[in-house]
Image 1 (cartoon, rainbow over the protein chains, first blue to last red):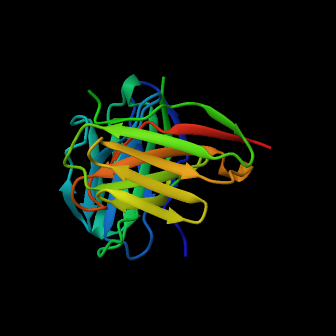
Image 2 (cartoon, rainbow over the protein chains, first blue to last red; image 1 turned 60 degrees about the vertical axis):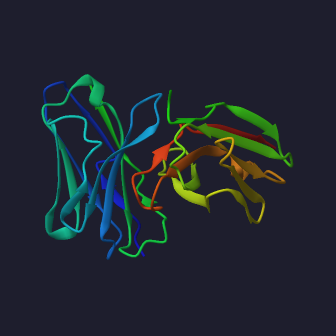
Length: 114
Length: 112
C-alpha cells in the first residue's frame, strides 16, 4: 500500500512568487492534514480536511495560504505571494475516517523562499 | 509559556544504554499523549500513544504519563544505533486524530 506522497520534495522560489504543494493521502483516508515546521520551531498544525470539507483551518497563518481538496482525494496548498517567513517543511498527513488515532505522515515538502 | 516543552538535544548515548526522553506541558486539557519518531528527511511516524495517566510498554519502549505533574517520558531500553532519530512528543485534548500539539523534538544519537 502506498503511503502519503508529497510533491515537490523541495522547492526554491523568490519572495513574491507562488508555489503549490501537493499531497496524495493514503487511498481511502478521509482525514487529511497539513502541518508545517519552520526552522528551529515545532511542527505546527495548519488545517484539517474531512473528505473535501475543511474541518479546522485555525492554524492557517494568513490569507496568502489557500488549501483545497478536490473531490476528497488529493490536496493542494498554495502560497501566494510567498514571503521569507514561509520557508520551512510542509507535512501532509492522513488517517482513516474511523481513526485509530495514528496519523500517517508524508516525507514533507521543503520550501525555501529567497 | 509554550504549551509543550521539549529539550531539543542533541542527546548522545552509547549503544545498549537506557535512554530517557521527556516533555512537560501546560494545558491540563490534554488527554492523549504520543511519541513520534522522525528519521532524517522523513516524516514523523507514530511510535507510541497513551491515554491519560499511566504507563505503556511496547518491546524496548515504555511511555509514561504523569498528569499531576504535566510530565511525559519515553524510555528506550537496550538502545540500538537504529534508534538514532528525532523523537517528538505530541498531545491532543480530545481525539487522537484531532489537532496535535508537538514538542520541538529531541535529536538522539546512539553511538555504536
